[in-house]
Amino acid sequence: MTAAVEVVPIVDEGLGNSSYLVDLGDGRALVVDPPRDLRAVRAVAARRGVAVGFAADTHLHADFLSGATQLAHDDAAQVLASAAGRREFAHRGLVDGEDVDLGGLTLRALATAGHTDEHLAFLLLDGDTPVGVFSGGSLIVGSAARTDLLGADRAEALARAQHASLRRLALLPSATALWPTHGAGSFCSAPPGAERTSTIGRELATNPLLGIADEDAFVAALLGSLGSYPPYFLRLGELNRRGPAVLGSQGLPELGVPVVRELLAGGALIVDVRPVTDYAAAHVPGSVSNPLRAQFGTWLGWLVEPDTPLVILRGPDQDLDDLVWRALNVGHDRLAGELAGGIDAWTAAGEPIAATELVTPDRITDRHVLDVRQRPEFRAGHLPGAVHVELGDLAGTAERLPAGPTVVMCGHGERAASAVSLLERAGHRHLGVLVGGPPDWAAATGNHLRTGP
Image: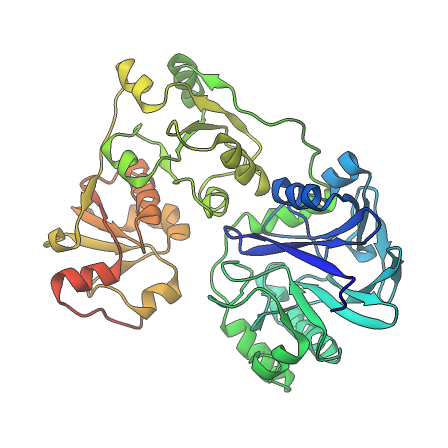
């Protein structure tokens, strides 16, 4: 990368994605794959003293709502995206090989179907010299993004398109920087622990999928690596095509207990975002536990229907602004408000509360053990005899799980608390959350974990 070109990655650890701000050197910036939550983008732009002049989307994102329409509204940014995406808002539709003059730098659209049909990678050029490529969900560090988000019937054809797209990107000069959108922690299939940026040369040397020249073998390897993903992925692409609603100032009204009671009677849901220990000590029966953390938005989108009005129950020291933006990022706009005074106000009003036992690893005894981690986590090491149901599948299987005292576990406790709340809603009782994860159980009991299914 030449010294004149400065690219700042902006990482969302919860979604496992990166957006990028390119300082164009003339007071303007290009932002690639901006999320709806633009706080970090705006902070970087303010520090550098630049205004966002261009917002480029590599594809119709399935895992977050784009901030491109917001940047167009607030900053008069020109939106750059694939013409094949048929977006229903003002943008410059690009076709393969089309160049955009950024005022000294050039952005070239490269059709790279696979992750989605209309996917573009954006090659950043300084004169005729490739500086780097914003690869979105095509070539990513150590892998390639999944190809099954448009339906299982399209997965193989898109995997074959992905093979061709990766081979095309591999022809770029080896020194070309690789700036993917999807990274470690993304359910769009980045390998865990991978770095978030790379170079074409490094990927040619280390990316196992780039080492597979045979198309059929590539397809088998890519499709065989795919795990589960949140159901909200199936609707956000269309919302991005239409254009996410432009937002004004954000905030949540404070709701008294009588108003919350009325909302619950009308179908609203309380989402308890407090830490596991606080939820376990006392919570509103029927509420869903989803502790506020980096992954809050993903699990909110996975566990709660998007048209459900939500009442937030939080602790006094939890950041309301952060919570709201994480919800909006995944399309949960129906935030009715927050319970004023939290759990103390609820109990003071004489409303019922429930509690959940926190179980240390040495006190599981003869209770059932339910492990709600993802399949690769479970196979890497689990308690002997544990029943495995991924948290995202639990609502649909809760009625078929055995009754009786059960300890629910994950890696640390947050997902287990969410699982307990779903099981309580389904009528299960005598539930506990394991404090810690499988290594803690092995250390406390001196027993060995099992691997495999």
